[in-house]
Image (cartoon, rainbow, N blue to C red; front, side, top):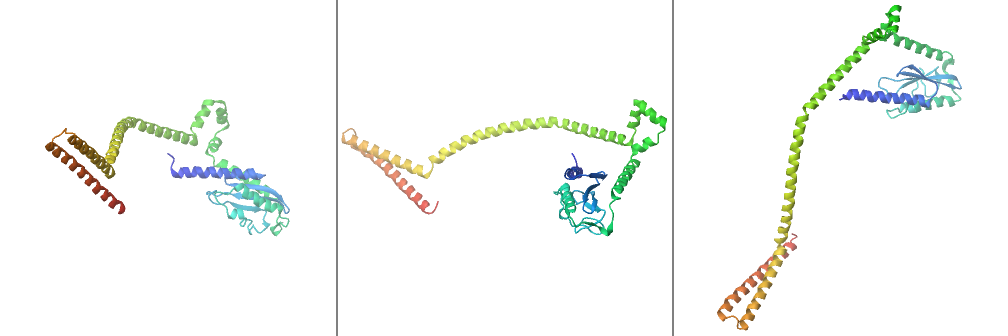
Amino acid sequence: MLSTNLYNNIDQSRKREQQIDTLKVFNENVTEISFDKEYSVEFPTKAGNLSLVIELGSKFPFEKPTMKICPRITHKWVDTTGEIVLAPGLMNYTIHSDLGRVVQVIRREFELDQSLTLANGGNNNGFSGNIAIGSAKNAITSLSNDVEFFSLAKLTSAELLRLNNNVDCLDEFISELPSIEASNKNIENSITKIMDLANSNMSKEEPIYNLRLEISKQLETIETYQKSYAELSTKYVKLSEKYSPQSISDNLKKAALKCDEESERIAEQFLNGDMDCDKFLQVYVKSRTVSYTRKAKEDRLNYQLKQLKEAGF
């Protein structure tokens, strides 16, 4: 995995490149003085041809760029050294600003200013030449610091000709270059890390498979518990309805009515002569006693429910 610092560097490099692209899109005559660091934009004004030099620091675009105008001019945005310090877009520059548009606004301000003059009677003839000389010096310095170029510079004409004519010699020479050796070493290290990571992943395959089996078993157990819970919940609801106070009261009322009907049936049998007096008294009294008992319980329960309701329960 990429470290946080490496990720931030990649993100900064990408945003820096995007800002430089906008500079070239919104402005003409953009010259690269130093790759990724310094650029110039040339444009005509009433005071003559001017060049706006844009210097990008190491933290750009997280910090604003430095801009100078050459030759130096007299303008409210420019200080005595030629640096642009009071341009609104530059003063308020943030990571979300657009470098190309900021430069475009500054350039148009100078192009449209009819009162623009050169400071101290300066001339504008030598600036383009200075830019070209600077670019040439930067190119020479870059080449002199290039290890590969230095390696070629040490070879004789015969050795250079041999490299040109022999592909094997050229491949051997290239493979021995420090940058190529470093790249090969980085590739080998990356391959080693990838292999280690792959082996580590392979070693985790069996534990992961066992964990999957364990999870499958636990899921089956959970499903069994869910079914059991659903059945018990249904049973609980039925029992709750059956043994609720209101349900008990209704059942007592029904049972009392049933006893009253039974008492009337016994009385009819006695009146019709189907039952003797002793048996009638025994059965009838028992039935009426049960009926009155159930009615008393019903009345008591209804009274308690009424009291609870009035109390807010």
